[in-house]
Length: 114
Length: 117
Image 1 (cartoon, rainbow over the protein chains, first blue to last red):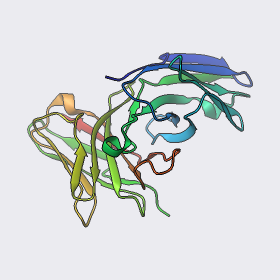
Image 2: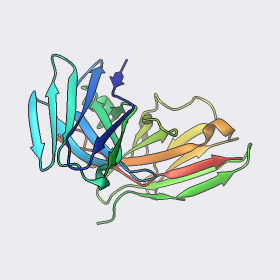
Image 3: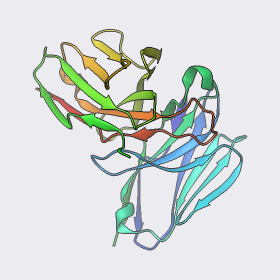
Image 4: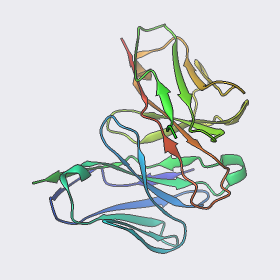
């Protein structure tokens, strides 16, 4: 089975840094994704990790440790528009059967305060 | 290049009625995934389809729910005899390939909010 855990909610101040942790226990692994979702809108892709290490993309970075089943998403220089839910998702290793099917965690709601 | 299109955006049904949700994938995408999201929760996988084939329906309830992706036209998620517990946001996503590129991702539509009275 698949089990993906992330905190339910986090609050941070504009201009600060927030780190959202995600731990996973899955039967297979072929990549970890982070999506951003504003209320009532479609999830949008933020980052992808399949090898251990840090991937940096502007103000957002994502880290993966496969041996620990652990990832984090780092948001720097927070802006008010970053208030959203952040979804951690794992892709199953069995690509031929599962395609690009993703299993999502419950999401972390981030509230950015002035 | 239009994104994933879902309609209707909002759907209200009374208990016992049928709900039909439509999804047109991005141009060139032949793989469609349906997810359900309850308020304050993550996305739960329901079904994965390719053109004319259901590949994985492990997340779909055995009764009342069905999905199709015909050769022509959009993918349809059908819920028969809806109950209040079916109220949720239903998201469709598409992708172009089956993992040929390591970083292939899902593109999501804006969802259909189903409300059952």
